[in-house]
Image (cartoon, rainbow over all chains, first blue to last red; front, top):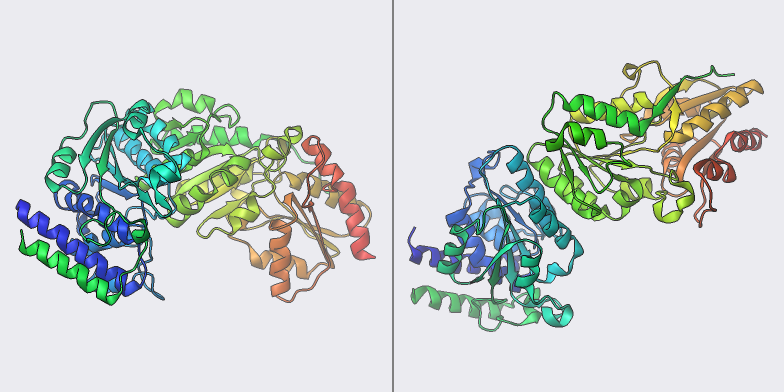
Amino acid sequence: MSDQELKAKSIFYRELTLKIITAANAGHTGGDLSCIDILNVLYNRILNVAPDRMNDPDRDRYVQSKGHAAEALYAVLNERGFIPESWIEQVGLYLSPVAGHPTCKIPGVEQSTGALGHGLSIAVGMAIAGRLDNKSYRVFCLMGDGELAEGSIWEAAMAAAHYQLDNLIAIVDRNRLQISGKTEDVMQLEPLKQKFEAFGFSVREVDGNDLDALLAVLQAVPFETGKPSLILANTIKGKGISYMENQAKWHHGVPSEDQLQQALRELKAEREAL
Amino acid sequence: MLPPLKMGIPNLEYMAQILTDRAKDDPNLMIVTSDSRGSGRVTRFGEQFPRQIIEVGIAEQDSVGISAGLASCGKKVFTVSPGSFLSARSFEQVKNDVAYSNNPVALLGISSGVSYGGLGATHHSVHDIAALMAVPNLDLCVPADNFETEMVLDSYLQHPRPIYVRFGKKAMPLFYQSASEVEFGKAGILHHGSDILIIASGETLQPAYEGASALEAEGIRTGLISLHSLRPLDKSTILEMAASAKAVITLEEHSIYGGLGSIVASWLMQQRLFRPIKMLAFPNEDLVTGSQTDLFNHYGISVSGITAAAAELLR
C-alpha cells in the first residue's frame, strides 16, 4: 500500500466515522477524529491481526483504553473486514450487536472498554503473559490524555516498568481537550513526557496526525530494551473538519445534516488534493 | 444432637496447599498478589513457582486488570487480595475487565467478612456479596471447609471462568468426609429436619451446625444446608428443604442487605413458598469493635441467636 493510499484511508475512516455518529445520533466525535490516524497506521501497517487470526496466540494485541473512540475503531474494523457493513449503522441502537463503547463480543475487539483508566493494566497482563510464554507478539494500548487523571493508569505504569515490558507500547492521544475543556485546566498533566520517563518508560513524541511520522515511530519500538515504550502522540481534537478542530464542545457533539454535508465536502476536497 | 466434627485447617492455608499442588502440573496456573503473599498464605507458592506469581504492590485495581490481561492470554489466574479491597477498591475492574470482558479470573477474597475483627470497618467486607451479586457473568462461592474449598478451586481449574471466592481466616470443622461429596453449584445437605431449616455458608456454618445440634437436643427437628454457592444457586434444594420445614433461619457474615438471607427469601417468595424467615446477619450500621467471635455473638450469629430465633419462629 502506497503512502497515498494510506492517506486516502484516513479520509475514508473520517467519513465513515461521521456517518456512524450521525446514524446513531451519538458518539465521541472529537476524540474519534484525533486518533483515527493512529488507528489507520496500527491496523494497516503495524498490527499482525486479521479477521481470521483473532484466535492466534501469536497475534499482536490492541487494547483501546479510550473506549469512547468506538466509532473510529468500528470504521477501521469494518474496512478491515472484521465487522459487517450492516453493523455500523446500528451503533447503540435497540438490540444492536454494537454498543457505543467496544465490547469483546465484537470481532476484532480484544477487551470491553469504556470506563477509563482500565486498558493499561490489561495490556500489562497481556505483555507479562507474552513474556512468560516466550511469544513475540507486542501489546499496544491507546489511551486518551484526559483519562491519565485516573490513578489506575499510574499503577499500571509502575508495573510495566517494574516488569521491564519492552513488548508493551502505550500510546497517548494527546489532543489536550476533554469534555469539560482543556486538559491543563481540568487537571494539569504536564510535564507528561517527564512523568512517564520518571515512571520508567522510554518516551517519544510524535505528530499523531502525521501518518509518515506515526509509521516511523511505531516501527521503531521498542525504543529501549528492557523498558516499555510510550508514544506521546500530539493530535488535534476533531482533526480534519474545520469547525470541529480544537473545540471541546465537539467531544461528543453530533453533526446536523448540514454540518455533516459540510464535513463530507471538506473531506472530499482533501481526497481530491492528494 | 448432630455428631461431633473433626477440625480442618484454615481454608486460606488449604487453598494455598491446593494451588501449590495443582501448579506442579500446570505452568499456566498463576497467582497475582497485591502485597498479600503472607496474608494469602502463598509465600511458599511464590518461592516454589517464582514464574507463576505476579506481585503488583498495594494496587488492587491493577491486580485485577493485570489478572484479566493474563487470563485473556490463556493463564488460569487466582487474584489473591483481602475481600474488603478486592470487592470495593477494584469493583469496576471486576465488573468490566473480568466479568464483562469474560476473562476467566478467579478472584479470591481473603480474610473476608469480619475476619479482621478489631481492625474495624475499613477491613471488613460485609458488602461484597451484595455488590458482586449485581455483576453478571460472575460465579460467587463461599466455601465453609477444606473440602468445599478444594471443590471450588478445582472446578475453576477444570472450567476457567469469572468467579469470586470468599475466604475467612479461621480453622473450620470438616463437614464432609472428602471433597468428592461436594458438588459445584449444589447445596450441601448436612441434616434433614421438618421443623426448622437453617441455611448458612462460610464460617457461619460452624455456629449453624452447633445451633442445629442444640435445636435437635431440644427435640426440634432441624435441617441444615451449606449454601457454598450463591451463584449458581441451587434453587431446587432450597425450595424442597424449605417446603418440608415450618420456618427458615439464615446465617451470614455479611450485611443483612443483599446477601444469603436476601437471596433465599427472595427466591422462596417468588416461588410462593411462604415460610417465616429470620435472617441472622449484621445490621446496616457501624458495627461494634471486637473479634470475629465477639461480633458473631453480639449480633446473634450464634447458637443462642439460633435458639432464640427458632423459639420465636415456632411460637
